[in-house]
Image (tube, rainbow, N blue to C red; front, side, top):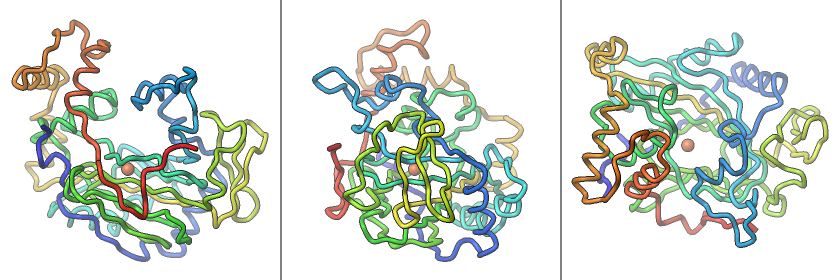
Length: 348
Ligand SMILES: [Fe+2]
């Protein structure tokens, strides 16, 4: 059994309209339309289809061949700032604005806070293949800069490390001027609870949310007859602006699909770290109470023993696939119920 409060957000998500001003939107969209050939989200984190399959836990189909369309949608991402640093001078005032930070501080009743991550997703017409996920977490001493993704996922699911958790929150601002699917599903009472959803149309509509502690997902979106992956689509495919408002999917310079502005769903994802008080803040920045890899692994192994899960103590835990498999299986958790309006799709 998973600790019952491991995936209960500090408060349920709250919707705020009109997050960005018109001049801010102009700046944001200028960066999106002029700076990039933006990679697939999956392309940012996986180098090969095999690697993606290994992490997704999906078995290849009966023919033994990985089918990209079983787990990939045309969802592209650009990073506008990370680790507290803004990557675009034009977006400085937005990234460091109080209007984004204050709602996150308020959500936690925190005294201090700092922006952490700013990114966007542009999604072409897509099936709903996401069965619910939670965003990557940080603990004092362990975060994505020094910890493999599989271990962070296991740590979050175990509920064992909350004493070291860095409090965080997000303002996710959606643009999807359509009512064909495309909502935000969330599980505010944990993965076994009833799902809820915020339904589009969305325009400059912000969700103030604790997405690191709550299962959630973007639903299927775009015209239903356009949701097949374009021919030639792969991990190397990229997205670039086309004309005034459209988007092209390209392989190198070959256009393999075109999306009109009305066919895409777009979101800006802002995330901040917050601190209850000065001692909480200093504990983080002065590293006086950091979790270490060794301590985390020992706590996980103690917990496996307490649960009576048999395993062999690994000599190289980060590379030991049997050990990694045991942990992943022991702490597996995911939502079981979906809104009737937004079922979990299977690939065509
Ligand atoms: Fe997410």
